[in-house]
Amino acid sequence: MESNQVNLEQLWATPRVEHSDIKEVYQSIDTYRLKKVKMNWALAIIGVSTIGWIIGIYIWLLDTEFAGNLWVILGSLCCGITMMLFMFNYYRLNSLMPESILTQSTSDYIALLTKEKKQQLQLSKVWMNVYIVTLITGIAIFTYPFIVKIDSAIVGGKNIVLMGYYIVLGIWAGVNMYGNKKMNTKKIIKLEQMISSLQAIK
Amino acid sequence: MYKELFESLYAHYWQRIYRLALGYVNDADWAKGIAQETFVNVWNQLPKFRADSGYGTWIYRIAVNICLRQIERSKKVMSDESKIRQSKSVEEEYKETNTQILYQAISELSEMNRIIISLTLEGVDQKQIADVTGLTHANVRTRVHRIKEELYQKLNNYGK
Image 1: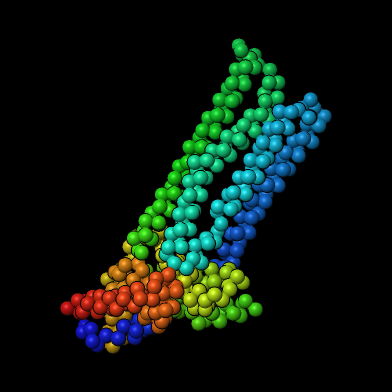
Image 2 (image 1 turned 180 degrees about the vertical axis):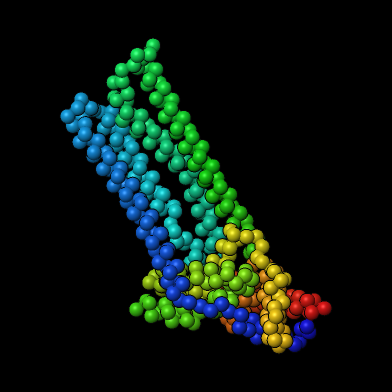
């Protein structure tokens, strides 16, 4: 094929085009919209359930010695605030429509990805650990008055039960912190790979 | 109101975006996915469009950014030589073969060059390409010239 006979524009426009169907695009739009609606509902249900659970526990405890107990109140507040903060930040960081789509240039896109990487780093190194620790602390504080009431026939009795309970809570916290660290590390590596590839493109 | 505007933009730009995506990934299904994703984004962002640029530049910019994100999916795009030969009439086969060779040659270029040449062959002027890609007009002009030389060379080598 001789170059002076080739008309690139003509070859480019030669019909090889997939027939378009706007209905498929509308279907994708609906799928995206439903995903967003489901996510909002999931977050709303978690939020409402958390508040409902706290209120429900108080109503249930009203006629008991635990009503008005400082440990129970503090523990509930701690857990409730942690859950709300977590949901707020999760929703903010995991937007389904990345802003990057609208950036003008590769440089802007790299800047946005770098910002997202910093946020993920902050999330994995600081905030996730803070959430887990404060949530576990809230649960530990909340359940303390209940655990000390447990009758135990074993030697050492209540102290052993308390210690065992808090050790299990601690292990659960550790497992969650490790799991989250692993998950966020994967996301960060992916972002770093994208940033390097885009920098190479420039 | 947005629906009518969206459908008119879709009718005008869908094939252009599809060809741009095809030039980038050289895979029909993948290109269709990119084109669909582009128009999903267009639909979602249309109420916020501020006319800082024309609709064309805006839509191409969305499509280009989606193409660049394909790095997440794969380091290489397909250049499937088995797609090149198909049984059709001699004249159709010749045209179709040359078109597929062109798309394969484009898929072998670097990512940004694929986008620049696809937009050029789509008839987008160089100033608009500069707006879409964030490069300077002079840079685009130089690159277009070099890319075309590279493509002619590849097409020549294939013929031998």
